[in-house]
Image 1 (spheres, rainbow, N blue to C red):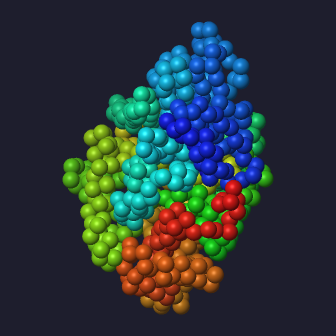
Image 2 (image 1 turned 180 degrees about the vertical axis):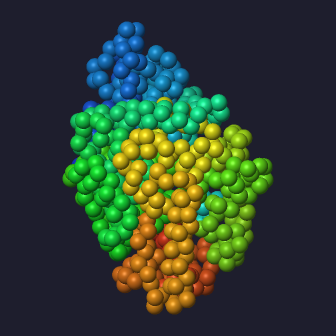
Image 3 (image 1 turned 135 degrees about the vertical axis):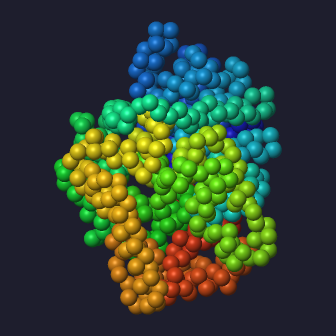
Length: 630
């Protein structure tokens, strides 16, 4: 994705910077800004020209401070007015200039006053310091590495690999995470020595040394003396304000509209603003996702488009998605990638419901905050959370899945990584600790934004500072099983509350126990589909119309997609790497293709890892000139 690249403390920084910029310039239409003050700093920005399109860096009045920034800041009129009263002069009048003057006025404490999605690099020439800061939630990942005495920063891992003195070593702990949890926990990447800057960080380089400190964290302060109605009323008020903040700019707005609650909440808030918005749904014809989204769009009168996903989309999109996400997102999540190029003709900025289900609804990838979690304590809590997370390749399955030698190397790493991540959560109350763990390990690797931002900019109302600060006051008993979320949406958009929620098939106005019944029915239907396929070896196959497309069935039924998986996963280059048990992987593929068992998540993870290996470890040439020949 476009973003920031920087080289610190290198007398040849400009040459390396040019290579790093080229590595993340994925389209000829991208704009490029850069600034070089060797050996202290060489920094660049690659961008779409949508947010803060003015050339950077931007300097203060005497030229002693400069800034290069990716992203945007919201709603700072009053603070800017105070700065002007204190003598600060604004020439460009954009977000990075505001940040620069704020830093000049308050020093490192400036960042606590920022509400937005951003990464910024500030050069303090007078004091010979470099300051790198990101937003509270890490919505725009920035990776860094130390190579000798220099430091490299980039919005994509691959840009750091442009330094050919960097020794590429696979990070076994990250591999263990990826296959246990479906994602990498903490600040690791697949390469040793390259880490992601934690959310809410101030990184300072001074006198040849680098330090990182955290300026904010999720601090739950539940107010048990408040009524549920109080929370609902204020949630609606604050959320509407959060959405209003994000309607700034003369942009063409859009939203991915699903059958869930997150996008429904956002679009119902947007309609209260005098801005046109287009809605888009991607999926399969006849699926409930598309059907419910169409009802919502019709109710609101939006210009709505349905974008059909083709069965073979991974054949054409997997490699590109893995390249853009540096391999850290399982290709099973690449639903958007095949439709994004079509959207950029109609919109500039897309609204996302990212994080809303966790922040307000107590749910993460189908894992709900429930009574069992609320009551769990100590080791019981850790065991419960670990069991719910480590479902891709469980501890029991791992000895068969990995080769004997590699399993000996990584045995115990997933639980160690998990416990380290859990220990970093300072919250004590189980329900809040549950949510905090997911929040800390979710956005930094919500890498679908990495390929989304190749084409569009995005805005995420749930990660508004005021909204999050208020949610942190709500006791978990109100958040579990979507209790307060349902009432919030019913208050925000009573007409939309009558339309069924895709996850349960029930309108949100129904009592909670009815939603529980709906979940059981949906779960039973999916189980029936799997059992019939398994028993009949795929001869009897009921179409899967619930939620996302049935990728497992597509891999079985679409000849091109099936061969794509088989040709890569059974290739001698793949099977001889030594990570996985060749016989077991072959068995998985046979069982999946015959309909005996659904291994689609595991097969997609294997495919993702192998293509990552080819692209970044082997550096196999590809035919994607826009990605590799720039």
